Image (tube, rainbow, N blue to C red):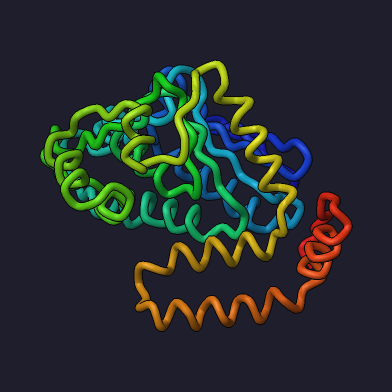
Length: 266
């Protein structure tokens, strides 16, 4: 994948794994317009590159993402009334939907504070691994706002309505250890183990069957909108499709031969 020179993000690939790093460490990787535009371009390129099997999203420096850069927003309005809905419509909503609809697994490696939209950006990923020192903050209440970037959708589904309400109304910091215990994230690891853990996890996913993983994501993400009967039919359709792939035949052969499968996505 040919990549332009970005200013606010870094995109690097090793084999089938692409790492996208939010790169405004002096602002705790808070979003400005340029970062939004670069993220949109990078995700479009990831979607089009069939060699990419896993995407890692992380932050540079001591934070994952502090959400919206309020100083950048203030400089654009110059004291005029602000339409936050327009910002969501133009930037955050397409970003969440783009991440969520990628066929490849997306891992958030949360290396520090994830606040506001930054917290919910991590939750939009398929799996979240956080360093022990990381934290998640729904900071919207302290600004008189409602959680956005999908927060009101993700939180109750991940931790239940009672905990979601407490996190949203109070805006308290939730440490990574407790976030893992609550089921908000997949795993919490020691700070010094974050990179190794995420790299190993990405390698495992990259070795999986691409179409099978894509359909698994699709089935799970859509399950909350379906009845059990509807979901059973979706599983039926997906299994019918995947059962006819070369990857399924390879998986059966590898199981029979007691060896690692070599999936090609066909």
